[in-house]
Image 1 (cartoon, rainbow, N blue to C red):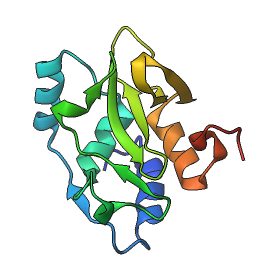
Image 2 (cartoon, rainbow, N blue to C red):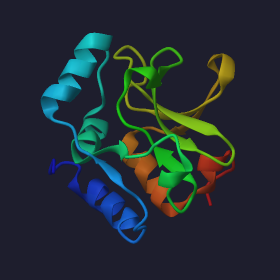
Image 3 (cartoon, rainbow, N blue to C red):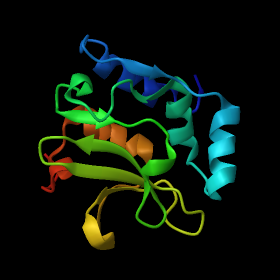
Length: 149
């Protein structure tokens, strides 16, 4: 585990551990992450890449079989999740169908997390993946369009 992000990643693991129904996809190798970045001329933020080395989303993402207790799914790193210019979709709230993306555009707000809406509309959520994880673990209202809880 990347020591710079180990407290955040440990908190995430601790949050998921009691949810025994969750099946995490195996983490990626650094070479796989680098290849994805090269093919798409993007850069993944360091904290997000550290998360991908730990777990590449949920195994059955895209189905009801792998939702966490908050009805969220974390998606694997795949080409089809590069959506809306400069953003990589990595998570969905399946009840409201809200998508969440991380900025992967080196010329943009790299690493910022936003809610993704159609027609290029976004709503800022957090300045980094690590900050997003803190909101997610706290089940903060900002994730759902409200203010901080």
